[in-house]
Image (cartoon, rainbow over all chains, first blue to last red; front, side):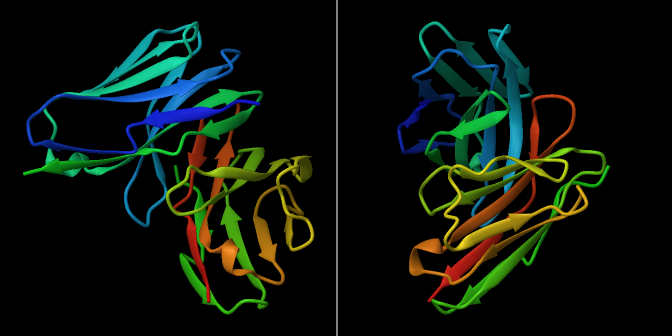
Length: 110
Length: 112
């Protein structure tokens, strides 16, 4: 059974800093990995989807990497802004199903 | 293109009452999912439909939860009777031909 872990559970950093969120998974037989953002009381917004054949994906200030062999992914956020404050969830995609981590609650301090 | 629509956005009920949630997926998406997200946790899959057939309902508490997708488009998720531990956000997602799932805004259920 696939298990997805995100560490830390919460993170606070001053505005402008670069930061890394971590995601690890137990079963490397995945199709893709996806990072989501969730604002309080809202649904999920897809940030980046990494195909299993890719090692990284970039969108603006966000860069996500994937290392299937070690069962790890990271989400790098450059030059953080207060608007980046949210919960970030990673999910692995296998056999048409998403298995989510518990998320990292990020607070950017102005 | 319009996204996944869900209603209501919020619902407060007392335990032992019934409640129903509605989802309208992205047009043309054959696969539809319902997830339950308890506060502080990641979403957990409840049921997956392919058109109007159930693909996976292994984590659906069938003694109180039911879901249907009669015409292969809209779907409803029902809880009868509700328990305190059902308080959560219920998310609907749909998927077309690729691997990416698109999520609706969710319905936040509070059971008192």
